[in-house]
Image (cartoon, rainbow, N blue to C red):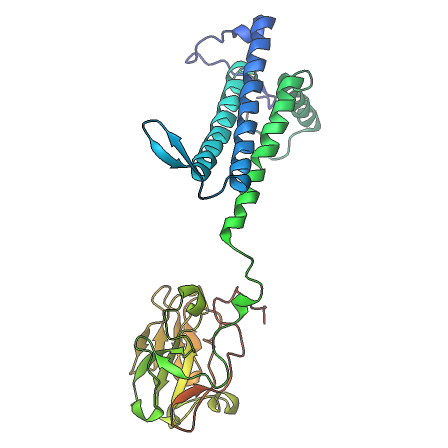
Length: 331
C-alpha cells in the first residue's frame, strides 16, 4: 500500500471527461473573465454597502414603482450586502467548476509518521495542486479576488459601530452609593428595617432621583435580595457581620457564575439557589458556594439605616457584580 496521492479510479464513478476550459484556450479565457467579473461585482456590492452606511441618510426615501416609497438607507444597505455575498459565492463556484483541477484524488492511510520519501512526495503533489490553480498566470482572477475579499472584509468592521459606544468603566459600576435608600421592586417604596420579619425575602433596587421608568441597561446589575435571619444564625467574619443590620443581610441577585437571577430561597436550609445551573449559596456563611459551578460567593452590600429607620446602603459594592469571568481577576 502506498501513501502517495494518486488518481482515484473507482468503477462506480463515470470516466473523467475533460472540460471545455481544459482543452480550449478560448473557453478557459472566457471562464476566467466570468469569474473575474463576478469578483468585481462582489467588490461593487461591498462598496455600495459602505457608501450606503456612511453617506445615505437614515431618513432618505426613494420611490420605486410597484413598491412605493422605500427607505434608501436600508434598501441599498441590503442590496449591497446581497450583491457582495451572492457574487462572491457565485465566483467561487464557477472558479471551482470550470478552472480548478477536478480529478478525484485519494490519500491512502498510513501509520503515524510517513517516511521522508512519502512526505516529500506529498509536498510535491500539494505544490502541483496549488500550481494547478494557475493563479500566477491568472492575473485577472487574482486581482479581482484581492479586490473582492479586501472590500468584503470592511463592512463587518464598519457595522460594529451599530453595537454602540464602548462601555469603558460603566460595566464595573452599579447605582449603589453611600446613603442610597433601598426601595422595593416593584413598587419603588422605601423599606423600614422594622417591617421585615425573620425569614422574609425582598427584592430591592437603589432609589434614584428620577422617579420615571429607568432603562434596563441602567439597572441590570442593581437588583439585590434582602433576607432577614436571627443574628445568632450567621456564621460570618466580623467584617462581613458589620455589613448586616439587625439580622438583615443583602446580596447581589446576579449569579457569580453566568449572570442569571438568583431567585429561589429555601427558608429551612437558608440557601439561595440559581435556577439556571443550580449554583447554591449559603446565606448564613455570606452566600458561600456550597454546590454548583459558581466559583465565587454573591457580592454582599453593606447596609445600615438612616435617622428615620429606612434601610440604606452604607457603601457601594466593594467588588464587581456579575459572572466570575467578567471584571474579575483569578484571585
